[in-house]
Image 1 (cartoon, each protein chain N blue to C red):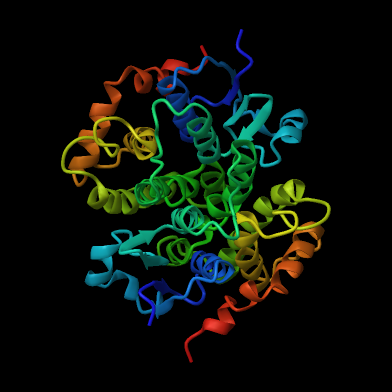
Image 2 (image 1 turned 180 degrees about the horizontal axis):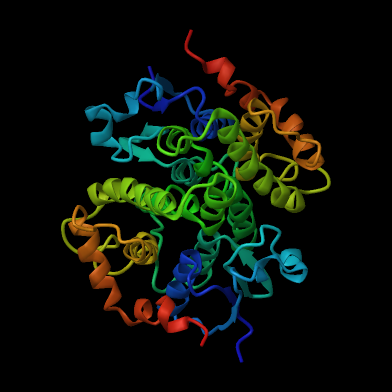
Length: 210
Length: 210
Protein backbone atom coordinates (compact mmCIF):
# COMPACT_ATOMS: atom_id res chain seq x y z
CA UNK A 1 0.00 0.00 0.00
CA UNK A 2 1.25 3.41 -0.99
CA UNK A 3 1.90 6.21 1.50
CA UNK A 4 0.69 8.63 -1.15
CA UNK A 5 -3.00 9.39 -0.63
CA UNK A 6 -5.27 11.47 -2.85
CA UNK A 7 -8.37 12.89 -1.19
CA UNK A 8 -10.49 12.78 -4.25
CA UNK A 9 -14.01 13.38 -5.51
CA UNK A 10 -14.81 11.60 -8.76
CA UNK A 11 -16.64 14.56 -10.30
CA UNK A 12 -14.25 17.33 -9.13
CA UNK A 13 -12.35 18.60 -12.13
CA UNK A 14 -9.49 19.83 -9.91
CA UNK A 15 -9.17 16.27 -8.56
CA UNK A 16 -9.36 14.93 -12.13
CA UNK A 17 -6.34 17.09 -13.06
CA UNK A 18 -4.31 15.62 -10.21
CA UNK A 19 -5.34 12.06 -11.10
CA UNK A 20 -4.10 12.63 -14.65
CA UNK A 21 -0.76 13.96 -13.40
CA UNK A 22 -0.26 11.08 -10.94
CA UNK A 23 -0.92 8.66 -13.81
CA UNK A 24 1.36 10.50 -16.28
CA UNK A 25 4.19 10.45 -13.75
CA UNK A 26 3.42 6.83 -12.74
CA UNK A 27 3.11 7.72 -9.06
CA UNK A 28 1.38 4.94 -7.11
CA UNK A 29 -1.33 6.30 -4.80
CA UNK A 30 -4.35 5.33 -2.79
CA UNK A 31 -7.54 7.32 -3.36
CA UNK A 32 -9.77 8.32 -0.46
CA UNK A 33 -13.15 9.25 -1.93
CA UNK A 34 -14.37 12.47 -0.32
CA UNK A 35 -18.02 12.96 -1.17
CA UNK A 36 -18.83 16.64 -1.71
CA UNK A 37 -22.57 15.97 -1.80
CA UNK A 38 -22.55 14.67 1.79
CA UNK A 39 -20.00 17.38 2.72
CA UNK A 40 -17.24 14.97 3.80
CA UNK A 41 -14.78 17.75 2.87
CA UNK A 42 -16.16 19.77 5.82
CA UNK A 43 -15.49 17.02 8.41
CA UNK A 44 -13.38 18.43 11.30
CA UNK A 45 -10.46 16.02 10.79
CA UNK A 46 -10.29 16.95 7.10
CA UNK A 47 -10.58 20.70 7.67
CA UNK A 48 -7.81 20.46 10.30
CA UNK A 49 -5.53 19.34 7.46
CA UNK A 50 -7.05 21.52 4.72
CA UNK A 51 -8.65 24.70 6.13
CA UNK A 52 -10.39 25.44 2.82
CA UNK A 53 -12.35 22.19 3.07
CA UNK A 54 -11.96 21.49 -0.64
CA UNK A 55 -10.66 18.63 -2.75
CA UNK A 56 -8.15 17.63 -3.92
CA UNK A 57 -5.61 17.20 -1.13
CA UNK A 58 -2.56 15.05 -1.78
CA UNK A 59 -0.63 13.49 1.08
CA UNK A 60 2.86 12.81 -0.28
CA UNK A 61 6.41 12.83 1.11
CA UNK A 62 4.89 13.35 4.58
CA UNK A 63 3.16 16.60 3.52
CA UNK A 64 -0.50 17.52 2.98
CA UNK A 65 -0.64 19.51 -0.25
CA UNK A 66 -3.71 21.46 -1.38
CA UNK A 67 -4.74 23.43 -4.49
CA UNK A 68 -4.33 21.50 -7.74
CA UNK A 69 -1.83 23.97 -9.25
CA UNK A 70 0.40 23.83 -6.15
CA UNK A 71 0.19 20.02 -6.14
CA UNK A 72 1.06 19.71 -9.83
CA UNK A 73 3.91 22.24 -9.52
CA UNK A 74 5.30 20.21 -6.57
CA UNK A 75 5.06 16.92 -8.45
CA UNK A 76 6.76 18.51 -11.47
CA UNK A 77 9.62 19.76 -9.28
CA UNK A 78 10.12 16.49 -7.39
CA UNK A 79 9.19 13.97 -10.14
CA UNK A 80 10.10 15.83 -13.35
CA UNK A 81 9.39 12.97 -15.79
CA UNK A 82 7.41 13.80 -17.86
CA UNK A 83 7.76 17.55 -17.41
CA UNK A 84 4.38 19.39 -17.48
CA UNK A 85 5.49 22.99 -16.86
CA UNK A 86 8.56 24.04 -18.87
CA UNK A 87 11.66 25.19 -16.97
CA UNK A 88 12.48 28.02 -19.41
CA UNK A 89 10.92 31.20 -17.96
CA UNK A 90 9.32 32.46 -21.21
CA UNK A 91 7.81 29.06 -22.09
CA UNK A 92 6.79 28.61 -18.47
CA UNK A 93 4.95 31.96 -18.39
CA UNK A 94 3.07 31.09 -21.59
CA UNK A 95 2.06 27.67 -20.24
CA UNK A 96 0.92 29.09 -16.91
CA UNK A 97 -1.04 31.88 -18.62
CA UNK A 98 -2.95 29.36 -20.76
CA UNK A 99 -3.60 27.00 -17.85
CA UNK A 100 -4.82 29.88 -15.66
CA UNK A 101 -7.61 30.59 -18.16
CA UNK A 102 -9.11 27.34 -16.88
CA UNK A 103 -7.69 27.20 -13.33
CA UNK A 104 -8.64 30.75 -12.36
CA UNK A 105 -11.13 32.11 -14.88
CA UNK A 106 -13.41 29.18 -15.68
CA UNK A 107 -13.31 26.52 -13.01
CA UNK A 108 -13.71 28.46 -9.71
CA UNK A 109 -16.66 30.41 -11.07
CA UNK A 110 -18.49 27.18 -11.87
CA UNK A 111 -17.69 25.38 -8.66
CA UNK A 112 -20.48 23.50 -6.88
CA UNK A 113 -20.38 26.21 -4.16
CA UNK A 114 -21.25 28.94 -6.65
CA UNK A 115 -24.02 26.92 -8.25
CA UNK A 116 -25.56 26.27 -4.82
CA UNK A 117 -25.32 29.96 -3.95
CA UNK A 118 -26.98 31.01 -7.22
CA UNK A 119 -29.84 28.58 -6.54
CA UNK A 120 -30.29 28.82 -2.79
CA UNK A 121 -29.30 32.42 -1.97
CA UNK A 122 -30.21 34.12 -5.23
CA UNK A 123 -33.25 32.04 -6.17
CA UNK A 124 -32.05 31.26 -9.70
CA UNK A 125 -33.69 28.30 -11.41
CA UNK A 126 -31.76 25.39 -12.93
CA UNK A 127 -31.96 26.83 -16.47
CA UNK A 128 -30.36 30.10 -15.32
CA UNK A 129 -27.66 28.24 -13.39
CA UNK A 130 -26.90 26.07 -16.44
CA UNK A 131 -26.68 29.21 -18.61
CA UNK A 132 -24.21 30.76 -16.13
CA UNK A 133 -22.12 27.59 -16.25
CA UNK A 134 -22.01 27.49 -20.04
CA UNK A 135 -21.37 31.25 -20.32
CA UNK A 136 -18.08 31.19 -18.40
CA UNK A 137 -16.80 28.09 -20.16
CA UNK A 138 -17.68 29.64 -23.53
CA UNK A 139 -15.91 32.91 -22.65
CA UNK A 140 -12.77 31.10 -21.46
CA UNK A 141 -12.75 28.59 -24.32
CA UNK A 142 -13.09 31.38 -26.90
CA UNK A 143 -9.79 32.85 -25.61
CA UNK A 144 -8.14 29.45 -25.21
CA UNK A 145 -9.08 28.47 -28.78
CA UNK A 146 -7.10 31.53 -29.99
CA UNK A 147 -4.16 30.47 -27.81
CA UNK A 148 -4.28 26.82 -28.96
CA UNK A 149 -1.79 25.39 -31.47
CA UNK A 150 -2.94 24.59 -35.02
CA UNK A 151 -1.41 21.12 -34.69
CA UNK A 152 -0.46 18.90 -31.81
CA UNK A 153 -1.22 19.37 -28.14
CA UNK A 154 -0.79 22.49 -26.00
CA UNK A 155 2.46 20.83 -24.94
CA UNK A 156 3.25 20.09 -28.64
CA UNK A 157 4.27 16.38 -28.76
CA UNK A 158 3.48 15.57 -25.12
CA UNK A 159 0.82 16.84 -22.68
CA UNK A 160 1.58 19.90 -20.57
CA UNK A 161 -0.25 21.61 -17.70
CA UNK A 162 -2.85 23.18 -20.01
CA UNK A 163 -3.63 19.81 -21.58
CA UNK A 164 -4.06 18.38 -18.07
CA UNK A 165 -6.58 21.14 -17.26
CA UNK A 166 -8.36 21.00 -20.63
CA UNK A 167 -9.72 17.44 -20.50
CA UNK A 168 -11.63 17.85 -17.19
CA UNK A 169 -12.98 21.23 -18.34
CA UNK A 170 -14.22 19.83 -21.67
CA UNK A 171 -15.86 16.98 -19.74
CA UNK A 172 -17.74 19.59 -17.69
CA UNK A 173 -18.65 21.50 -20.85
CA UNK A 174 -20.14 18.36 -22.39
CA UNK A 175 -22.01 17.50 -19.20
CA UNK A 176 -23.71 20.91 -19.40
CA UNK A 177 -24.29 20.49 -23.15
CA UNK A 178 -22.09 23.37 -24.30
CA UNK A 179 -21.83 23.41 -28.10
CA UNK A 180 -18.13 22.66 -28.79
CA UNK A 181 -18.37 23.56 -32.53
CA UNK A 182 -16.78 27.03 -32.03
CA UNK A 183 -13.65 25.39 -30.57
CA UNK A 184 -12.27 23.00 -33.20
CA UNK A 185 -8.71 23.14 -31.87
CA UNK A 186 -9.77 22.43 -28.29
CA UNK A 187 -12.00 19.60 -29.53
CA UNK A 188 -9.12 18.07 -31.52
CA UNK A 189 -6.69 18.35 -28.60
CA UNK A 190 -9.21 16.90 -26.14
CA UNK A 191 -9.81 13.88 -28.39
CA UNK A 192 -6.07 13.26 -28.78
CA UNK A 193 -5.57 13.48 -25.02
CA UNK A 194 -8.43 11.14 -24.20
CA UNK A 195 -6.68 8.44 -26.19
CA UNK A 196 -3.70 8.56 -23.79
CA UNK A 197 -4.06 5.84 -21.10
CA UNK A 198 -3.04 8.18 -18.23
CA UNK A 199 -5.93 10.48 -19.16
CA UNK A 200 -8.43 7.69 -19.82
CA UNK A 201 -7.75 6.02 -16.45
CA UNK A 202 -8.43 9.29 -14.61
CA UNK A 203 -11.90 9.78 -16.15
CA UNK A 204 -14.65 10.34 -13.55
CA UNK A 205 -16.64 7.31 -14.71
CA UNK A 206 -13.54 5.15 -14.17
CA UNK A 207 -13.06 6.28 -10.55
CA UNK A 208 -16.71 6.77 -9.51
CA UNK A 209 -17.45 4.79 -6.33
CA UNK A 210 -19.78 1.87 -7.00
CA UNK B 1 11.63 55.61 -21.26
CA UNK B 2 11.41 52.00 -20.23
CA UNK B 3 10.66 49.20 -22.67
CA UNK B 4 8.70 47.49 -19.92
CA UNK B 5 5.02 48.36 -20.21
CA UNK B 6 2.23 47.41 -17.82
CA UNK B 7 -1.28 47.46 -19.27
CA UNK B 8 -2.97 48.42 -16.08
CA UNK B 9 -6.33 49.34 -14.59
CA UNK B 10 -6.09 51.24 -11.33
CA UNK B 11 -8.90 49.29 -9.64
CA UNK B 12 -7.99 45.80 -10.91
CA UNK B 13 -6.60 43.82 -8.02
CA UNK B 14 -4.69 41.51 -10.39
CA UNK B 15 -2.98 44.63 -11.82
CA UNK B 16 -2.37 45.88 -8.27
CA UNK B 17 -0.47 42.62 -7.48
CA UNK B 18 1.80 43.12 -10.48
CA UNK B 19 2.43 46.79 -9.58
CA UNK B 20 3.53 45.71 -6.09
CA UNK B 21 5.91 43.10 -7.54
CA UNK B 22 7.41 45.53 -10.07
CA UNK B 23 8.03 47.96 -7.19
CA UNK B 24 9.46 45.30 -4.84
CA UNK B 25 11.89 44.18 -7.56
CA UNK B 26 12.65 47.80 -8.56
CA UNK B 27 11.78 47.18 -12.19
CA UNK B 28 11.27 50.45 -14.07
CA UNK B 29 8.11 50.41 -16.18
CA UNK B 30 5.64 52.58 -18.02
CA UNK B 31 1.95 52.12 -17.23
CA UNK B 32 -0.67 52.20 -19.97
CA UNK B 33 -4.03 52.76 -18.27
CA UNK B 34 -6.59 50.38 -19.76
CA UNK B 35 -10.05 51.46 -18.69
CA UNK B 36 -12.29 48.47 -18.06
CA UNK B 37 -15.38 50.66 -17.74
CA UNK B 38 -15.03 51.87 -21.34
CA UNK B 39 -13.94 48.34 -22.38
CA UNK B 40 -10.50 49.38 -23.66
CA UNK B 41 -9.39 45.81 -22.86
CA UNK B 42 -11.68 44.61 -25.68
CA UNK B 43 -10.08 46.85 -28.34
CA UNK B 44 -8.94 44.72 -31.35
CA UNK B 45 -5.25 45.68 -31.05
CA UNK B 46 -5.27 44.71 -27.36
CA UNK B 47 -7.15 41.42 -27.86
CA UNK B 48 -4.71 40.53 -30.66
CA UNK B 49 -1.99 40.53 -27.99
CA UNK B 50 -4.12 39.16 -25.12
CA UNK B 51 -7.00 36.96 -26.39
CA UNK B 52 -8.67 36.99 -22.97
CA UNK B 53 -9.08 40.78 -23.14
CA UNK B 54 -8.20 41.19 -19.47
CA UNK B 55 -5.69 43.21 -17.49
CA UNK B 56 -2.93 43.03 -16.50
CA UNK B 57 -0.63 42.39 -19.44
CA UNK B 58 3.09 43.03 -19.01
CA UNK B 59 5.33 43.68 -22.00
CA UNK B 60 8.85 42.80 -20.86
CA UNK B 61 11.96 41.30 -22.48
CA UNK B 62 10.14 41.51 -25.81
CA UNK B 63 7.27 39.29 -24.61
CA UNK B 64 3.60 39.99 -23.85
CA UNK B 65 2.84 38.20 -20.58
CA UNK B 66 -0.69 37.70 -19.24
CA UNK B 67 -2.26 36.30 -16.04
CA UNK B 68 -0.86 37.84 -12.85
CA UNK B 69 0.45 34.54 -11.47
CA UNK B 70 2.32 33.77 -14.70
CA UNK B 71 3.74 37.31 -14.76
CA UNK B 72 4.90 37.16 -11.13
CA UNK B 73 6.39 33.68 -11.58
CA UNK B 74 8.30 34.97 -14.64
CA UNK B 75 9.61 38.02 -12.79
CA UNK B 76 10.65 35.82 -9.87
CA UNK B 77 12.58 33.52 -12.22
CA UNK B 78 14.30 36.29 -14.17
CA UNK B 79 14.71 38.92 -11.39
CA UNK B 80 14.93 36.81 -8.23
CA UNK B 81 15.65 39.65 -5.80
CA UNK B 82 13.64 39.72 -3.59
CA UNK B 83 12.34 36.18 -4.00
CA UNK B 84 8.52 35.95 -3.71
CA UNK B 85 7.96 32.23 -4.34
CA UNK B 86 10.42 29.94 -2.51
CA UNK B 87 12.61 27.62 -4.59
CA UNK B 88 12.31 24.67 -2.17
CA UNK B 89 9.45 22.48 -3.49
CA UNK B 90 7.68 21.97 -0.12
CA UNK B 91 7.81 25.68 0.81
CA UNK B 92 6.84 26.57 -2.74
CA UNK B 93 3.76 24.29 -2.66
CA UNK B 94 2.64 25.84 0.64
CA UNK B 95 3.08 29.39 -0.69
CA UNK B 96 1.25 28.62 -3.93
CA UNK B 97 -1.60 26.91 -2.05
CA UNK B 98 -2.13 29.97 0.15
CA UNK B 99 -1.90 32.41 -2.74
CA UNK B 100 -4.36 30.36 -4.81
CA UNK B 101 -7.03 30.87 -2.13
CA UNK B 102 -7.08 34.46 -3.36
CA UNK B 103 -5.96 34.04 -6.99
CA UNK B 104 -8.40 31.23 -7.86
CA UNK B 105 -11.05 31.01 -5.17
CA UNK B 106 -11.83 34.62 -4.27
CA UNK B 107 -10.78 37.02 -6.98
CA UNK B 108 -12.16 35.48 -10.22
CA UNK B 109 -15.57 34.95 -8.65
CA UNK B 110 -15.79 38.65 -7.78
CA UNK B 111 -14.51 39.98 -11.05
CA UNK B 112 -16.37 42.87 -12.67
CA UNK B 113 -17.57 40.43 -15.36
CA UNK B 114 -19.36 38.27 -12.78
CA UNK B 115 -20.92 41.27 -11.04
CA UNK B 116 -22.24 42.54 -14.37
CA UNK B 117 -23.66 39.12 -15.20
CA UNK B 118 -25.41 38.82 -11.83
CA UNK B 119 -27.00 42.24 -12.37
CA UNK B 120 -27.72 42.27 -16.07
CA UNK B 121 -28.41 38.61 -16.91
CA UNK B 122 -29.76 37.41 -13.58
CA UNK B 123 -31.56 40.56 -12.48
CA UNK B 124 -29.93 40.70 -9.03
CA UNK B 125 -30.05 44.06 -7.26
CA UNK B 126 -26.98 45.86 -5.90
CA UNK B 127 -27.54 44.58 -2.35
CA UNK B 128 -27.56 40.96 -3.54
CA UNK B 129 -24.45 41.54 -5.67
CA UNK B 130 -22.66 43.13 -2.69
CA UNK B 131 -23.65 40.17 -0.50
CA UNK B 132 -22.25 37.75 -3.11
CA UNK B 133 -19.00 39.75 -3.18
CA UNK B 134 -18.61 39.73 0.59
CA UNK B 135 -19.62 36.06 0.89
CA UNK B 136 -16.73 34.74 -1.23
CA UNK B 137 -14.16 36.98 0.40
CA UNK B 138 -15.40 35.90 3.85
CA UNK B 139 -15.24 32.22 2.91
CA UNK B 140 -11.70 32.53 1.49
CA UNK B 141 -10.45 34.76 4.31
CA UNK B 142 -11.77 32.32 6.96
CA UNK B 143 -9.49 29.63 5.48
CA UNK B 144 -6.59 32.01 4.92
CA UNK B 145 -6.79 33.25 8.53
CA UNK B 146 -6.22 29.62 9.66
CA UNK B 147 -3.26 29.38 7.27
CA UNK B 148 -1.75 32.72 8.41
CA UNK B 149 1.28 32.94 10.73
CA UNK B 150 0.77 34.10 14.31
CA UNK B 151 3.60 36.61 13.86
CA UNK B 152 5.22 38.26 10.89
CA UNK B 153 4.11 38.19 7.28
CA UNK B 154 3.05 35.20 5.16
CA UNK B 155 6.63 35.38 3.90
CA UNK B 156 7.88 35.65 7.51
CA UNK B 157 10.38 38.58 7.52
CA UNK B 158 9.78 39.70 3.92
CA UNK B 159 6.70 39.69 1.67
CA UNK B 160 5.96 36.63 -0.45
CA UNK B 161 3.40 35.89 -3.16
CA UNK B 162 0.52 35.54 -0.68
CA UNK B 163 1.35 38.91 0.88
CA UNK B 164 1.34 40.43 -2.61
CA UNK B 165 -2.15 39.01 -3.22
CA UNK B 166 -3.49 39.84 0.24
CA UNK B 167 -3.24 43.63 0.15
CA UNK B 168 -5.33 44.12 -3.02
CA UNK B 169 -7.91 41.61 -1.74
CA UNK B 170 -8.22 43.37 1.63
CA UNK B 171 -8.62 46.67 -0.22
CA UNK B 172 -11.56 45.13 -2.11
CA UNK B 173 -13.01 43.74 1.12
CA UNK B 174 -12.92 47.20 2.70
CA UNK B 175 -14.45 48.80 -0.38
CA UNK B 176 -17.42 46.44 -0.03
CA UNK B 177 -17.52 47.00 3.75
CA UNK B 178 -16.68 43.46 4.80
CA UNK B 179 -16.22 43.25 8.58
CA UNK B 180 -12.53 42.36 9.03
CA UNK B 181 -12.89 41.58 12.78
CA UNK B 182 -12.95 37.78 12.24
CA UNK B 183 -9.52 37.97 10.56
CA UNK B 184 -7.08 39.50 13.07
CA UNK B 185 -4.01 37.90 11.52
CA UNK B 186 -4.90 39.03 8.01
CA UNK B 187 -5.65 42.52 9.35
CA UNK B 188 -2.27 42.66 11.13
CA UNK B 189 -0.36 41.42 8.06
CA UNK B 190 -2.19 43.84 5.75
CA UNK B 191 -1.31 46.78 8.00
CA UNK B 192 2.35 45.78 8.13
CA UNK B 193 2.47 45.41 4.35
CA UNK B 194 0.83 48.75 3.67
CA UNK B 195 3.69 50.45 5.52
CA UNK B 196 6.17 49.09 2.94
CA UNK B 197 6.81 51.75 0.24
CA UNK B 198 6.59 49.24 -2.65
CA UNK B 199 3.06 48.37 -1.52
CA UNK B 200 2.02 51.95 -0.74
CA UNK B 201 3.13 53.22 -4.15
CA UNK B 202 1.02 50.57 -5.90
CA UNK B 203 -2.23 51.57 -4.16
CA UNK B 204 -5.12 52.25 -6.58
CA UNK B 205 -5.58 55.82 -5.34
CA UNK B 206 -1.90 56.49 -6.09
CA UNK B 207 -2.16 55.31 -9.71
CA UNK B 208 -5.73 56.40 -10.53
CA UNK B 209 -5.78 58.56 -13.67
CA UNK B 210 -6.62 62.19 -12.88
